[in-house]
Image 1 (tube, rainbow, N blue to C red):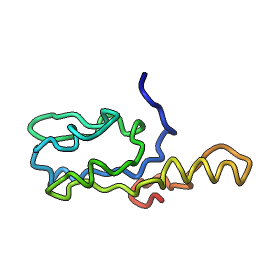
Image 2: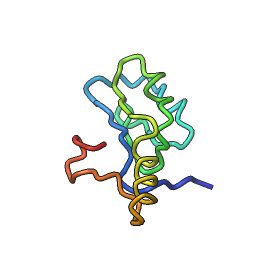
Image 3: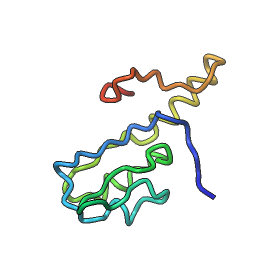
Image 4: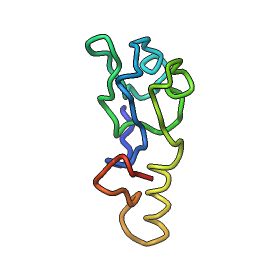
Length: 98
């Protein structure tokens, strides 16, 4: 069974210019978020990211970034506090998220 987290709340980012295609992110990701394509990794299942940080810690080229526990966790907590739907209060511009 695949885990499904909240849509569009993960803080995971991949800089394709820094990616050398070593594949470490693919090897360590527990939820198959990455796929190897044209000699480099790419994010294919971003909403399955649980923000554990394993990919970031194992990328020797600093091509990945994630703020562990902020996206989904923040969204769920804010939903509980406000009594509304889970929302990480991200703008449409994902670069300014969380």
